[in-house]
Length: 300
Image (tube, rainbow, N blue to C red):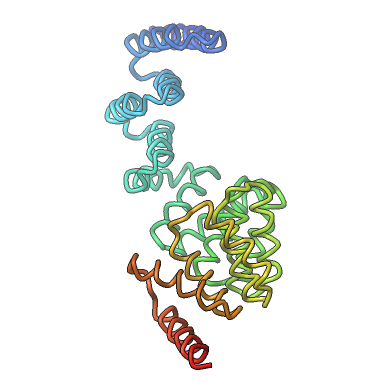
């Protein structure tokens, strides 16, 4: 047995010891052992990966980045290190740093790499590349977590609402508790003009989280559009109690009171919007209509 093979066998034993310490909730002991492995065998990739994993678990992301970057400088073609550092940047939201690393994995792309790339391309509004990557994930595993949802979100961004609904429904069939993808589905139904389906999805969101502000707001807007102002008021006032400074809620409430003919309530809200410099063109038209109604009432 050669010297390098002896070192490798010894390193494996030490890593097993480190893992055992982790199982005993002794990360500092595990870190000491892994540093010893790296000092003795600097090319033993698994030691860097395990030590970086511990740093990340302790939220010491700077240490994990420094460790992986240093290892990658010495071994630039080691795909495991490229993947680990790229994934770290991705999970930290540093997409510009993650993208070039993940793209280097052309010959070694697993579904998680494709999904990360799809997410990055989506954020960059490169919908064609994003969809291509998401479809590669689904080709490998039709039930891969978040893949159907990401593809649905891509279609939503492209205003392809039928396909957005199709894939978002698939995602929620696999993970019905996802708030983000259910919000996407509700939004797709709303933009498609299917108000009843949108209302059902937004209602599910506030059933899941009673303080979910967008759900209360959108239920109020939809009910007003469906010609149910009485029910709309309940949801809008609940939204306003969660976010008292929301100009959007105030605008919908003002239009609601205008529809009901409650001129003074509507004008009071428009005064608040004016003070906040949040009057839109539509608001101005509604305000003019209210003023005409108010003048007629005064004359009578």
